[in-house]
Every structure is written in structure tokens, then in C-alpha cells.
Image (cartoon, rainbow, N blue to C red):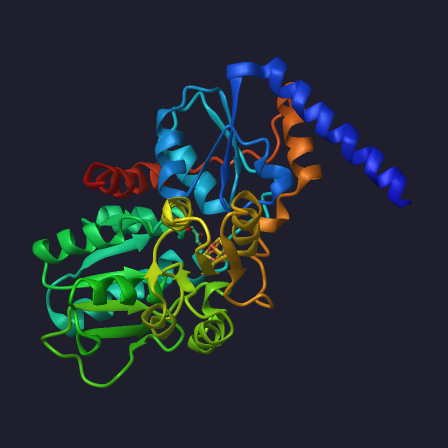
Length: 354
Ligand code: 13P
Ligand code: SF4
């Protein structure tokens, strides 16, 4: 296809999405995660981090929720909406590699081992970046979900309730947050699901947090060396990273927080502040465009973008919007009731605590 034909096609898609949105009015709402491409996010009625999007899904009365994000986020939206509302993920293959690092069978095995080892059940906490069936297990066992913006508050609560936390699937968010709460690294253990064992020697009575050995393949690629290089090349630069980054990277950075936190930090900073941001590229480059008064760099420009977030592009969005307009039900995300009911317990506990 020639570049010109490609451009014309894009123009047609942009125009048709606009017109369809006008026709559908309040019938359809488009929710967009901050990591979405510019060509997609421009059509979002609301943008947010995963906590904000979950709250928006719970509040909207639109009949169709077009979720521009990844699979676990669309599942959460379905769990929180009424049965007559329909959640659509423009590309059902838009998953999250971290969420795929734990499934219910593995979790059940781990749970038994932890009870055998420590005697009493830990407080299970799952990052929202997990499947509905993992959330359901956590809900059934008295636990709750967290996002990167409320993990600290919820882990503090959990430690008042039980002696230990079992945190999954992101070891980095769990470790970074627990450390901020004053828990030393020696009081944290890693559960290795492949080897079905707790790493790092004997189980100790003073263990406070057991971390599932999972990670985000995007954020794990920001290293302390990138922070040091940025500081050398741009004296005075502030480094801000997502808490899915490794412990050592977060320790070297000036600040860490959720996507919403990062955006607010940039907005609040005085003009002329230099920033190196360690998170997904779509967000970093959008912030650089929207804030020409700041000097913004990616902490590691050769780090990959989130491949799955980027699966949702203009053609996928266009197809989904046209399907809604034409009454076709495609790429609907529906969590089976027996899973959704327990997953909802875990999510609502989180929403109540903040
Ligand atoms: P936020 O909750 O900060 O939006 O993060 C979600 C996510 O998937 C980060 O990789
Ligand atoms: Fe999942 Fe990482 Fe992509 Fe976030 S950035 S959706 S954690 S793979």
C-alpha cells in the first residue's frame, strides 16, 4: 500500500470514529490507559492509571465500555459493571506478560506450601495485573487487590491484620512497597513458582512478606546504570520511575510512583526541570510533547515499549467502534459469574480502603 493510500485510510478511520462517537453519545464510553498510543488515547473519554480506570468503570452507566488497555483491566471493568453493560477490548490478544506469570493452579500449590511452612495463612494480595481467577482466589482467602497507587496503604493494612503478606505476581512492586513501609530486605522471601519453593534458605519466623517471582518485562529493563548515566549527562536531572522497576533502580531514582503519580509530578514541577522517566514509552513521549516547558527523557531509550498495550492501534479501535455502532458484539470480555463474584470481593475491598 502506498504511503498516500495509507494516509487516506487513516483519515477515513479517524473521521468515522469521530462520527460514530457523536452518534453513540452516552451509550458508549472509551476508557484509555496512559500507556496507549496517541492515535488511540486521543479518543478516550477518560484516561487513567489502573486504579482510576477501575473506579471509572464502576461508576459509568454507559451501555458499552470500550476499554483501551490490557486484558486484566477489561476483566476488572467487566467485574465492576452491571450485567447489562458490555466491556469490549479492541484486541483480545492485548494481555499482560506479568499477569500471565501466575495462574490459579500454581497459586493453590504455593498457598499449601506457605501454610505448611509458616503454620498460619498469610494475607494474600494480588496486584491488579493478574487474571480474574487469581483475584478470585485472593478474595476467597480474605485478601484483596492493589494497584501501584495504593499498594503502600493496603500492605500496611494487611500487616496489621496478619503476620505475613503473600504478594503476587510482581516481586518488584511488592519489594519496593514493603521497603518503603520499613520492612528490611531480610524479612522478605521470594516464592519461585517454577521450582515450587521459597528461595533463600530456611523459612524464618520473622519473614513479613513472601513475593511471587514475577516481573514486568518492560520495567525490569531499567537499570541503576541508566540512572547514573542520566545524572552524568544531565546534571541536576530528576529521575522518576514506576515501582514495577527493580529495587536497585528505584533506590537510585529520586521518586517512584504509578503512571498517574508520574504525570502529576511533571505537571507540578517548575518549568525548566529536567526529568528522566522510567516507564512505558508512549507515556514518556506524550509527556515530553505535552510539556515543552520541561526537559523530558526516557530513562532508557532503547528499552522496549509494552508490546501488548501497543496491540491496540487505530485500526483495532476503529473496528470496535464501528461494531458497537452496527450492533455487532465482538471482542466482548465476560468473566464467568463464579469467578467474577469472588474477584469482585477482592477488588471492592481495595476500593473501600482507597
Ligand atoms: P498503573 O497502575 O500505574 O497505571 O500501572 C499499570 C501497569 O500495567 C504498569 O505497567
Ligand atoms: Fe503488563 Fe508490564 Fe505491559 Fe504493564 S507494562 S501492561 S505490567 S507487560
